[in-house]
Image (cartoon, protein in one colour):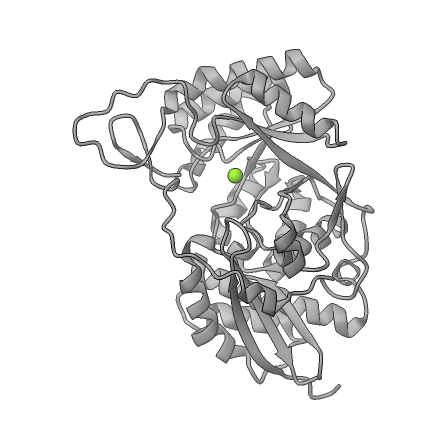
Length: 400
Ligand code: MG
């Protein structure tokens, strides 16, 4: 196969459930040889599709799909300006597809390309939420009864609740929350969880950047007695210098990164050992090529991986994550959201979860496929997200 070439790049949009998913298919000059990649930026799906259809796709067509490193590097700088979420996702769609092709060419699963398995399967964490601590305890028990040992616990979703907001006249629409209310309700939640559940389960919590930096320092300290597996997204990317203060005052494990686009947002936190888990969204940083490098960088500094895995990562992206999870020595945990039957029909080959572990299949490449005909029957809506417009009680916009 001396003259293998990329023949075409397709960008597919589909919405089998609540999230708009973006899947890139790279076709080659070898009949039947193609790869799949995830480019899901669900809130800006049309912008990613345009970037694939008009820029990244035409740039790689005619080139050798085996030269993944050169294609990734050149696609990233070809437009001169770089490292934005739309472009990174578009590049990720192609990049994951090229690794899928590379595995198919070698006749091995992708994890074999990266050194083989460090473990048979990846431990996953799931989500429990409720309006009261008692409801959250019940939610955790439902998971542990099914064999799960890691559960993320949220009170009232991301936004929090309990405070009676007194809004000023003329307050605009938005997802209102009271940041200060979390400072007592979240420690009380974890006190109740430990009292009811003991130490039999690992507990996690996601702050979703909804605290002022000094309040984030307070919360990390206040949660220390409850021995969290990790505390996630405690600070907005704009406030990451505050991690030094958090590190100085407590040993609560810190996970960070789903909003990161640029390597320089990540490297200081890793090299200064200010976080314990890197939690980037694989397509948001540009795919598997940068994720492999990031994994190795993190290993050198004792930081473990916890790739973002909610419903707005497509099953192709989840397969990519699980291949990394079983291969990388410094794997920490994998976030998991279960998909409904229709989504599983569109994406045959989704890694299976049994007893709290995700297993990649042993098919060549990423081991996942895509039914374009079924996917086309689930067109995307164009609704604007509302949860991202979060506001403090007086109406001030807050970064979600
Ligand atoms: Mg999060």
